[in-house]
Length: 467
Image 1 (cartoon, rainbow, N blue to C red):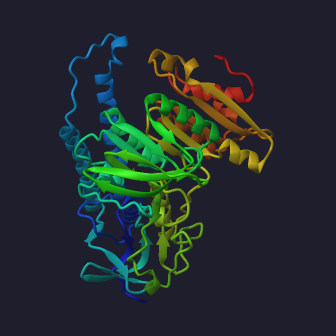
Image 2 (cartoon, rainbow, N blue to C red; image 1 turned 90 degrees about the vertical axis):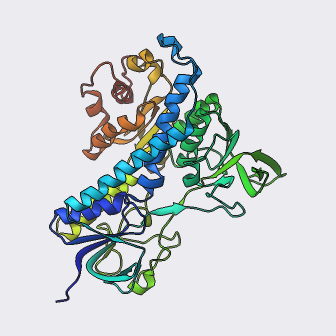
Image 3 (cartoon, one colour; image 1 turned 60 degrees about the vertical axis):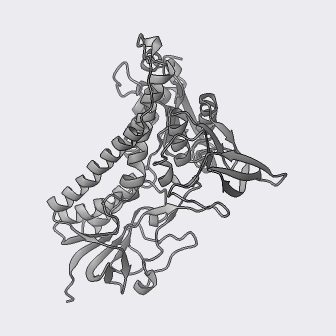
């Protein structure tokens, strides 16, 4: 029997990787995690989910204090001003606390952190920095990085054109921010800088923003964002960019072809998607290949085609979401330990942390109707929800999609200020195979926003109370 340095080696310490390492160690496996960053946590904690949410929260507070929106509640705020350096400092503090927390959890669970970039030397050996280690099982959890746009060169080191990492650290509020891409990241970071005073133009190649989300929710979101001040140009292709005198000029044209025009901005955010991080791993030395999208294919248990090598998170097919990676990390570690680790990929919630928030789980209405013409839809507006009305925060609605015969919930989509929190109830219900009637007859506390989900479920049967 071969002697290995570790039972499990995880490559990458993002949400999938660090969770997989901790779970493997909890199950009694000698575990190490290879990470080239100076801090643990991957993109999400360092330059993604966490810092962006810190800025979203801070910018929302600033907008409330400076816009006069609180006056209707009897709160008069005078002379609110922006200290952007302090806002960035508070963001950095949150990141440091959370990345340091993972380092503590590694020590607590006896996970060894191997510092350095990792590359395969064989199916069971990996070079990490200047050291080569062997492992009986290797989990690839290297995440994803920003997809580049041909003809638009990003320079995060103080340049005018940045990606999401650069947009999290702009040293001043741009007069005009152009966001290339109307997806989640672009809209979230566009929201941050618009609240802080920037004019924001979103340029999206497709006909609608937020591709992949429920069509009705997408339309409602576009309407609300335009009301907030976003200039949204859909069906528009960016063909080039040039910078001069601390400004950028984009060349754009209709996606279907047509005359070119130019848009000038003080900053440009390139946000057209992400791609798997597989370059530099020397996968060929391990006997692995990637598919046409650069992903590593796995089976239901996260095994690759090479025995002993597993993969999770953004490097495998499926939505690139931190919580998906976390669940896969736990399941993968459990499978390695001989347990049964399962992830229900039909019930993975998605959230956009704009204001209002947008969230969904399961099938969109369009997807449900493609699978079966027999679906029932129930909707309930936050305008009719007592808590939302009391808070004067009534934008949006909840939508429940159910099978017409069995009444089983196929999908739930919502747009509202607490949608990101509310979607958990819908995901739990779907995980247990709930019907719309199950949700409708579950007592919900009053007055809460979550009553809108109950009423949307009642509306599937055509019997909501408050509309």
